[in-house]
Amino acid sequence: MRKIIIIIGAVILVGLVIVGGIYLGDKLKQENQFAVCGEVCTDDAGCGSGFCFEGICRNGECPNQEDCQCIAEDVDKRLVRKSFFENFYDGEIDDFWKWDDGGGEGGSFEIDEVYEELILTAEGQTSQWSALDNVPKIYFLTDRDFVMDVEYEFDPRVDFQHAGIGIIDPESGEWVRVSRSYDTHSLESPDDQPNSIYVMQKKDDQILKFNHENYRDVRVYVRMKKIDDEVVFEYSDDGKQWQVLDQVSVDGWSEEVKVYLFVYSTDINGIAARFLQWQFDVL
Ligand SMILES: [Ca+2]
Image 1 (cartoon, helix red, strand yellow):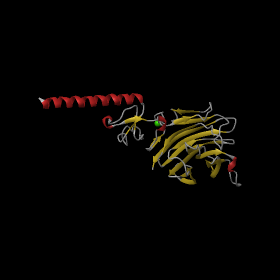
Image 2 (cartoon, rainbow, N blue to C red):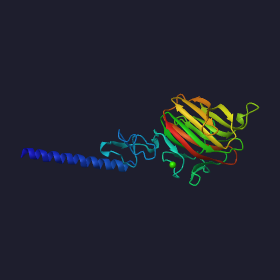
Image 3 (cartoon, protein in one colour):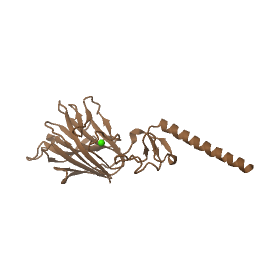
Image 4 (cartoon, protein in one colour):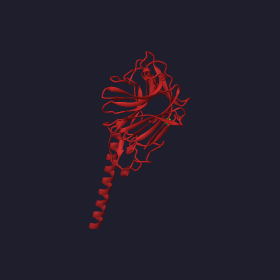
């Protein structure tokens, strides 16, 4: 008889723990649209389209919920830690990308489903320079070493119009970038053209101008590779043969950086860039 009571008691206790656990889990899931799962949500878990937010459950759904301890997490702190490819074949952009209008109202981004590309548009009198950054951009956060290739079309005609890719230190706001540009800063020797591909950095509230090369094509291929505190920028005429443009140190930056695409025009008229595809590979 005593044994039976102990068994019944144990069963009730286990039942209470399970019910309590489910209740608590559901409550946490309801409260947090996104939640972090300890060791569960890694690699293949929930990685539908070739990427994964390591440790993050989408909409509270975790692959192995019974093993998962959910805690609140800031949605804006999602980190991309897996390689991914984008060519807009599905007419959508992954939802870890964030939009920053730069404070203006005329900038926009939209996906052209027919041409399968992303159109990033800046209004006139936009610029990313020493004190100013009112540039429309899209970005995501990562804390990994990576290489990223981007193919886009951009046809600048007047000073100073730029479109390209780069990284930003979220803490200091400093950035380093490569862009296809029309920029008369590049006129340093008789052969130089304002139509160029240009590496620049904002550091200590100053703009450092790195190497540039003449580049007249509208179709642009750029690559940036970040390893620890070093960023190498390359460009290509055809997406196959690559040339190193320059290498920049980002010593002292936070580990998490914004990877961003941008466009701007200091001219009175705005301008758009059409991004065709990109490949992001974690190293
Ligand atoms: Ca897509």
